[in-house]
Length: 394
Image (tube, rainbow, N blue to C red; front, side, top):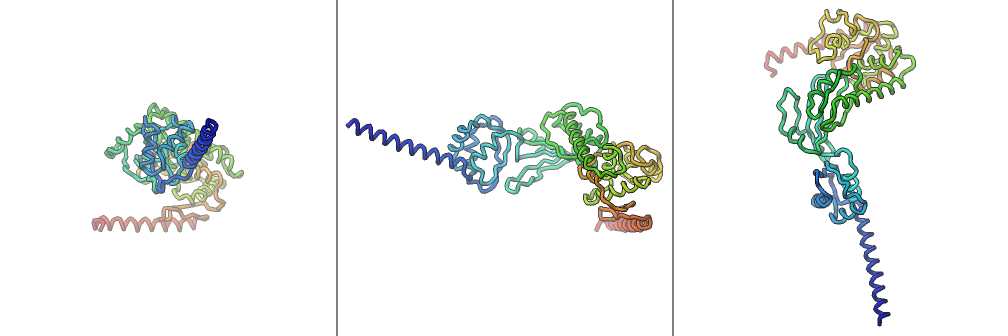
């Protein structure tokens, strides 16, 4: 009888172990299998939260089939204590394993609210936007100009949330003075910005920052990025360029940056200035004259006077030969590469064509025709504006 009981016990134990193994295998498959989520969500993990709350939230939003398996899997992978606070984008079909990896890996939030400080040539603005998980596109919630517009309540509200991300978007063509003054006004940064960096030394780009970041450290990041870009462009330059140093390349690129906002034109504009340098002609470019007046401290806000075109300043390329002594703005990667590898053309002249771009010419006669055409366009626009003003715009 004892032998029979022992045999039954062994059989029961084998069956139990077999069933337990099956349950474990099933749980493992559930943990790594494609999840039930059919539309992306933004999962918010608040500071002080734990895996139990997160698993319950995921189950409520239909992202996991079992909150229990999710917690067991996270514990088995020894990731329960690695939970990070933030807002994380969970893609459709994400497995429990993938979600656990997303919320424990660390790094910046991948969705939620983002505050973008845009430093432009003509204005500085702050944009509050949120990522729509369904479309993976940002939706603007508010935008304002600090110091001019009333600060919207949502800005203060989002600044209190620990998972709000911050970004500085530096536009091509801004001056170093504009950057420093803008950083001084950003209330999420701390510390002294220091002296204004040399013109052209800052890379136009998008920089993620955190509340409390040091202003001087942010500027140092911008300088390091520009040093890399200039070195890359200098290394890739055409060997027969009439420039002698990376500093000359940076100066030429800054002029190209200020002369055109049309990406496809950069190479042509650069070719005009290279051709002029090769022929010993003066560059005669208005942005250098403007820089001689403003020194990069703000926007001129009006047209140039004839007396200013004749005035002798180190930057007035109607008066001086060759390149000015410094850049006149901070050029981006595209303008640096255009200066390093300009288009091969015979162009010597260019003038606005009324579309936002320019009409290029090889001879002075062709250029004069283009100028006359542009003057006509200006006159027609002036007459149209005057007509609209006299009729109240109707």
